[in-house]
Amino acid sequence: MQTMKTAVIGSGRIGRAWAIVFARNGATVRIHDASPEMLRGALPAIRQSVEDLASFGLIEEPVDAIVARITACGTLEETVRDAAFVQENIAEVVEAKRVLFAELDRLTPPDALLASSTSGLPVSKFTEGLPGRARCFVGHPVNPPSLVPLVELCGAPWTSPGALERALAFYEQVGQKPVIVRREIAGFLLNRLQGAVLDEALSLYKQGYATAADLDTVMRDGLAMRWCFMGPFETIDLNAPGGVADYASRYRGTYRDIAATRVPFDWPAETMEDLDAERRRVLSLDHIEERSRWRDRRLMALLAHRRSLMD
Image 1 (cartoon, rainbow, N blue to C red):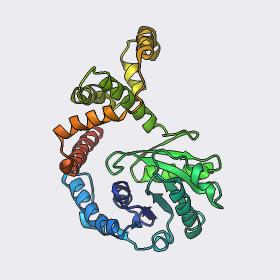
Image 2 (image 1 turned 60 degrees about the vertical axis):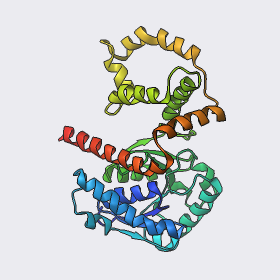
Image 3 (image 1 turned 90 degrees about the horizontal axis):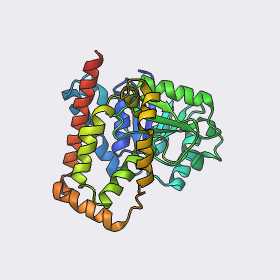
Image 4 (image 1 turned 90 degrees about the vertical axis):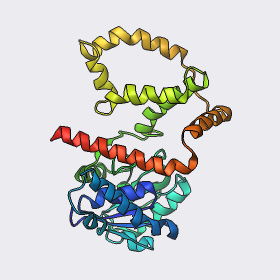
């Protein structure tokens, strides 16, 4: 990894976190943003995040050594020159991504891997006409990837298996937990699972079954207690003496009854305004950034704890 040259396009939260992921594992990183103001703030924000990681014992080198591997670049050409791996993190706009990937395909070495952090757009939407389209794919992270290791890899029909194999190996090298989405689907895996839970939570809230705070408690102090170290399939496998088959025989009727009464949520403005008002009574907008940093530090503590259990 010490000779790996990477490029990060977009210096918002996701881009900065990717820069940390790559740099803390020995890769050199060049980061670029179309907004000079965003780019100016990138390295100070990255340093603060790396200092937080150090405070939880989550890095093995001095802060300065990691930050020194990251360089802010004023032009796209300078950023991706000689890069072996490019991670794009711009807005979820198909045309903007199409234009950028055409430039990336033109400016990068022909064997460089080109990944998009898009959370919902299939890579086929913006790479179809590229000469180097076989090396393009989605590398969808969880925010922030420096703390939550999952990354979903999804290619277009023309993405080469070899490119995905190389990407899988690279993400594993930098400490992530990559999974393969076998064919394109809107939202990939994580957002579809998250969307199903969110849809039901919002529906229950709209129908008046519980407050937002109580529904958050159900997740935080209920389901999430197990889901933070095992998935839903392992959970049900352990929740019946005879495993998954036994669980299905015991509870399929219950879940069918629940499904028959489920009311999909259609995102009405009135409900979202009520929810926003309830949240603003708990957290004012001018404290969101502070609370976000609190969240990140809690994730750091959880990550440190998980690592201690594996030692």
